[in-house]
Image 1: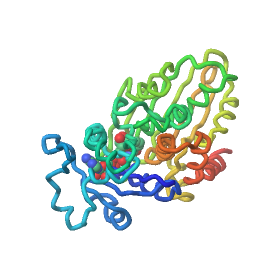
Image 2 (image 1 turned 90 degrees about the horizontal axis):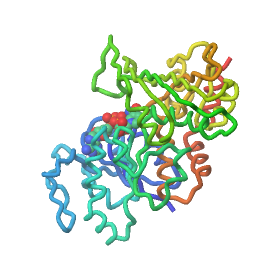
Image 3 (image 1 turned 90 degrees about the vertical axis):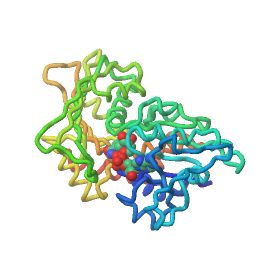
Length: 371
Ligand code: NAD
């Protein structure tokens, strides 16, 4: 059986989802919805049905008992012969990936969960719509937040929606999963993380600063991680700096007993989506160049370097490099599998890893960036 996918918003995350879901044998693209003709629009309309979306102003909407469509459509879309409005797409798809900018997903939720949509879907024999939101939305947008390893088994075919956490939370969450799950390691007492974030994505026109940093103490990332690991004591500080590829992290973990960095390295190496590296200096330019050389820039894995902190026998520092635009793609695919299919966690993660060539990427990064 193949499941039909709709993608709403085709920026940094959305177009990657279209590309990979199109390659996936269990899914087919029902269409995409967009508010503008920017970005990859021309390429996408040559391949997939296109539906018009708009920023929702509920006053403009005229839902009635028969699920009336929006009465305003942007004229500049007409020449592209759209297949309909976002509402039409919602009647042709099993699952929606909402990859719109922060705070738009929560507005679109009004459409996805509208009673008339539910009724109309029932009339034409469709199951309730499943929706995956992205990490820019507040956790309350969905039933729960998602990272594949800790969350897959908590999601079932009865679950209606999930929120795949942001790139940074995914990076930290993958690493902490191994440490929290392994009973042979000492327990974590607490963790602190300082993040250095890219100020914009390479494709963004929004503008950045060129000689400044922006800092946020007690940033949302630690709180976001607690949506996955509620009992973990963690604090985070986030800096944004003028760069566009990768986020860097310095994650300091204090354990309740002494810890050996080799034990943690060995453990992290077993995780299929973590590349354990040990360069003299962790330079994001190296990761970028290797990614560009071998697999077209998207590397999906978090790169981790584990270091003992001088005389602190109970603490480790783990440096992380997070490829911000691609790290959440495997989690989105696993999330769709968890919501729709009967695949086990292992089956899902293995097939997603194979689809995205993650084993080769991990192996290449570890090979190139370890002495
Ligand atoms: P983006 O700005 O690159 O793209 C957003 C897309 O949504 C654009 O195509 C825009 O035209 C479209 N859009 C805007 N309003 C819309 C509407 N009402 N209906 C349909 N389409 C609409 O954004 P992004 O970076 O891809 O981020 C999307 C989500 O993913 C956000 O929640 C973000 O926090 C999250 N996220 C982003 C990154 C990243 O590095 N960019 C990483 C992880 C998670």
